[in-house]
Image (cartoon, rainbow, N blue to C red; front, side, top):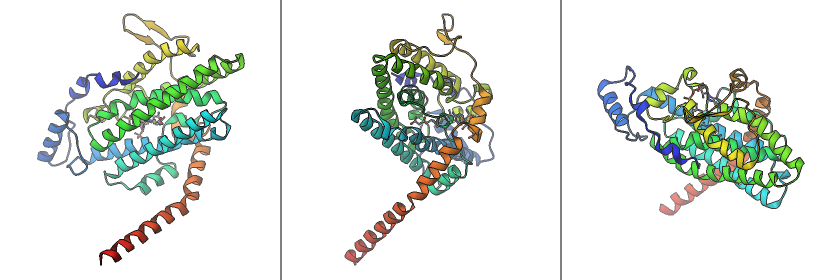
Length: 336
Ligand code: 3HC
């Protein structure tokens, strides 16, 4: 449904000139040539420090989003309306944990430890996706998170399968396949509710009303206000800009909303024949930045739940390390 992002031309990014750098000229030229040829950079390759830093920033933020994203949905596992929905939700939440693991592993190949990244998250220094700082008030929210939040995530992440950094790109292939299941299960759950009672239909519409604008903001600030985009595109980390991805998401979602029978809460949402895209209204960027900067409705709750889960899991990490040490000692004894 969203794979059209694979076929979007990279020309705008390629047109950008290499950015001036104090890195060794010969190594830098080789690196730029590989990027220009659309080659992959691997962990053992030389890379400019700024490229490494940008990747650690983006991949760790992405990993944090996955594991914080488990929390609002995890709250609904015990309240899912049937055994089938509970089994699907458990599988989905488990997938998100797995995505976090692939992504932390990809970031670790750049020389930053998982403990450092988790410390940054738990101390409130690191960012994670704004969308997970809003409450999940009723069961329809779980469906809407699948349809719209995971739908927006796929739109953003399919181009990352072609990211210039090999470990990130490869991790994204599997993440996107699983996200596609997440999106479809959410849409299907909503279709079932829309065929139910008036009350159920009202719950779906209410969830869409609350989540629509927040999902549009997930793609990040407008291109003109996005400090990292130019360099990210030049390096082939980002392939499509924030605004272009947002537009693609809107264009893909409007027909899905029609099939579902819900109204997207934007009076300015209209097909523009000349542009070949839907026009849409103003996103509340002040509210977005408030949330990104720690003042959204659930930031504090999400962070404290996350820190508690980490602390409660301390004994599991210690037991796993003790077990690994024992196995290693046994293997050494047998080899001796
Ligand atoms: N939430 C929180 N912070 C955001 C944000 C959002 N929705 N959008 C942008 N930001 C932050 C950026 O991280 C950056 O902060 P920093 O400079 O302090 O690191 C700042 O706002 C400016 O934004 P830019 O556009 O300049 O930043 P980027 O070029 O990095 O683009 C991005 C932002 C599009 C989110 C990009 O980083 C990206 O594609 N990241 C990988 C995908 C990702 O992290 N997705 C998060 C959702 S994952 C998910 O939803 C889980 C799934 O299971 C549902």
